[in-house]
Structures are given as structure tokens and as C-alpha cells.
Length: 471
Image (tube, rainbow, N blue to C red; front, side):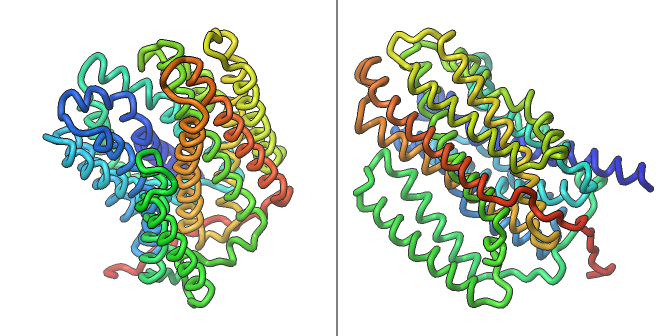
């Protein structure tokens, strides 16, 4: 029996890790392929921006809905559906005859990933014994870190040596291989008594849509543009209505009592701020290496590996340390180290800075990011009851995605206001204050994590409730 449970846990880790890799990879893989996409399909600059934003938009706004569907109708069942949608949309993106159809396929991809991602973490938690979850989350974090690390590199390499279509074709065989494994190797689970909160789902989904839609339009229309202000105001109003709904509804999709737990609220605040600083900084630094350093996209991706690739090496160790000394201290140290790395980069960067001079900042930032990922996931999942783990995972993922979207928009706006693309020095004038803001965001994340309890309360092992036969 124990051997059988161990095998189930290993398969859950393999499947959830592979699915998480695909979803995380498609956040970044398309960025280095955009010039080739434009040359092949045509379209305006705004069209190309939406090939990136369409995925982020649907991914962020549907994460909580995907988790709620899994809790109600079966996590394995909905995980399978999300994986199927994601795989089919990847094939559609590869076959897209124009930018409009490519944008539509990317939006559907994001919807599939929004269902798949939170449920992968919930299924992994349910299949793994509590004493081994830190190590499992460490491996899961390393795999997701690998996707972050290799996204620009894979996109640039496939585009340069084969075709941009293969950044999407890559997902198809992986998805087709995983589909039967999910059915054969993973157990079904439900949240006891889960009900689908339709009104709450509509309020939070449209509210998040408004905010993310506004953020992804900032660079094109500015913070005072009509569509940006409309999105921010409407999104804020709808989210306020969602909070009121959750406080008044008997069974809301997001129980506000979760945020009364200092571990849950603190680690989620830290996640939002960390992704704000991290994604905004990676967005700017990848451009710095190309526009000022003069590197090709593939070369720039390789030179970012000391930062983005560090989770592959450090995340499993972070999971082990979290099991021994507690996740909170590991997360706080990781965030402090990443903030220090960004601050060091801001102090070091110049128009003629050598790559060797950038390495210490890259390594420090990457090691800090790696120390954060796995323990943060474990803290979120251990701070709630097993019945709440699906929606907790969805809420946590949605907050991180929103933080990343705001980070790209805010740091990009600071860059445009203080500098620009006109010359290497103007680029440095813009990126330096942007990096300082990124460092400040991650430092605030460390403070938020430090305010969480020293140890989250340990959740009871997740029970796999099964529906009676024939239901």
C-alpha cells in the first residue's frame, strides 16, 4: 500500500511538473519570436503585443474560475479538460494563417492553462504525504523555474533554426502523452460540498479582466488613456463588488476567512510584490542585453541563465531546507537576496558595462528567486484546509500573474518617462530607476513574508473524496 502511494506521488509530480512547465513556458516563449511572426503574418505592433497579452489576460482572469470548477466537478476531470484545451489551442496557434487567429488561439491557450495550473498543484498536494511535500514542491518549483529560464532561449532557438511555428508545436506531443497518464496515474478528488458561485465567478473574472486589460494597454495608450482609465475604474468597482459578495454570500468562491490567516495573506502579498519586481525587471533586462549589449535573442537568453536558470539548481535544495527549518525563513532570505541582486544591478549598470560585471547581480537575483518559489507554494497550501486548497492555489496564482502584469507595465512606464530607445545611454537612464523600483517591490515582498507566522499551521493530509458510482 505504501509503495503504491509512493508511485502515485511520483506520477503526480511528473504530470503536474510537465503541465506546469508548458503553462509557464508559454508566458515567455513567444517574446523572442515576434519579429519572425510579424515578417510571416504581418500585422501592426499592437497586434504583436496582443499575441503576448492575450495569453496573460485569459490566464490571469480565469485562474480562480478554473480552480472552482475543479473543486466542484472533479480536479482530475477538469485538469484533463484544461490540458486538452491547451494542447488543441497550441496546434491552432501553430497553424494560424494570420495575426487575428493567432491572438484568438493564444487566448484559448491561456484559458486552458488557467484550468490546468492551479489544479496541478492541488492534485500534487493530494497525492504527496505531508512530510514529503516540501521536497515535491521543490522539484515542482525547479521545473517551473526551468520554463522561466529557457522560455526566451527556446523561443529564440526554435525561431532562428527551424520556424516560429515550433514554439507552439512543441506543446502538442507533450500534451498528447500526458492525457492518458492523467487518467491512469492520478486519483480523482473533490472539495467536499463545493458549489459553483456563478455570481462571484462573473464578478471576479470581469473585474480582473478590466484591470489586466488596462495594464496591458498602458504602454500603447498611457495611464491616462480612455481605455486604461475605464479598465481600471470598472475593474476596481467589480472587484469591490466581488469582495462585498464574498462577505455576504454563504458559500462564496473565495472565502474571505482565508485572508484572516496571516500565513495565507502574508505569503500572497509577498507573491504579488515579488512577481511585480521580478517580471518587470526580466522584461527590461532582456531588452538591455539586446539593445545595449548587442546580443542576438538566443545569445541574450543564454546570458540571462545565471538568473532565470538558478531555480533548476537551488529550488530542490530550498524545498529540503523548508522541510527542516520552515518555509518562512527560506522565503524571507530568498526575497532579500533577490532584492539585493536587483539593487546591485541598478548600481552596476551602464552603457559600457561588461557581462562579467553583471554576473554577481544575476546570480544573486536568481538564487533569491529560487529560494522563494518552492517554499512559497508549500506555505500557501499548508495554510488552508484541504477542502480550500484548490481555490487557494487559484487565488495565489492569479495574484502572482497580476503582480507580473503590473510590474511590466509600471517598470516600462518608468523606463519610457526617464529614458528610451534612442541611444545606449538613454536606455540606461530609463532602466536604472526601473530596476530600483523592482528592487523596492521585492524588498517589500520580503517584509510581507516576514510578517507571516514563523510556521504555518499544518493542514491535515488531503483526503481524496470520490463521488458515488454513477454520479
